[in-house]
Amino acid sequence: MAIGALLLVALGSLVSLVLRASDRTASTSQQIEETSRIFSTLIDRIETMTPQRWAGAGAGFVFEGTETALIFARFPKASEAATGSRLVILTSVGPDLRDEERSLPPDATDINAVMDRETATATLLQQGYTVRFAYFSRLPNGQEALTDRWSGRRAMPVAIRIALADSRGKLHGSVRVPIRVDAEPGCAAPGQGICSLVPDDPSTPENGSPAGAAPIDPNDGRGWERYVRP
Figure 1 (cartoon, helix red, strand yellow):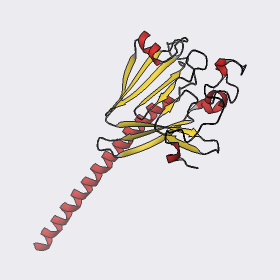
Figure 2: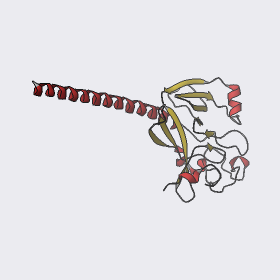
Figure 3: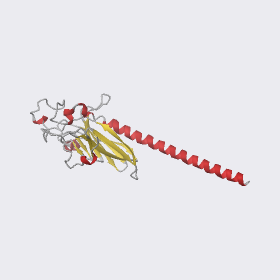
Figure 4: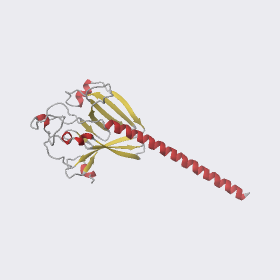
C-alpha cells in the first residue's frame, strides 16, 4: 500500500511537471509568433522608405529618428490607390505603436508644412510591446556605429535596429533592417556622389550638402562612439 501510494504521488508530480512544461512551451511559442509578426510588419513598412528631400536650397532628407519615433518618406506601390509622395510617422507610446501617414507635397519645406495641411490616416500596428528604434551609420573607416537619434539633415542611416521589450522591460529580440539608400550612395550622403533625386550639377545649391562633403563625424555628440563595432 505504501509503495503504491508513493508511486501515485510520483506519477501525479510527473504529470504536473509535464503540464507546466507544456504550458510554458505553448506560451513561448505564442510569444515568438507574436514578436515575429510585429517584426515582419515593421520591416515591410520600413523597407518602403525612399531618400526624398524637403523643398528648398540645401534642404536635408525627409528623415528623423529617435528611440520612440521614426519619420520618413515613401512612394506608394503600384497596387495602392494613393499617388505622390507620402510621409510616414511611426510612434511608440508605452505598449502602443501607431502608424500615421500623410500626403507629402513637393513644396513642403519641413514636417510642420505637412502637419498643417493634411489629415492623417492612423493605424494601431501593435499593442503589448514597447518598440525602440536605433540607427546605424557607416563610419569613414568602414565600421558601423549605432545611435539612438538621427537627423536627415546631412545623411541617411544605412540601417535601422528595431527592439521589442515587454512591460517589465525584458528584451524579446531585435532586428536590423537595411535601408535601400545604400544602392545609391549619392542619395545617402549628399555632395559625395551622383543622386537621381537631385540635379546633376554639383555646383547648384540644391545639390550641395549643407554641411559640406566631409565624412560623418563620429564624435558629433550623438553617441556613435559608444557603439562602434567591426
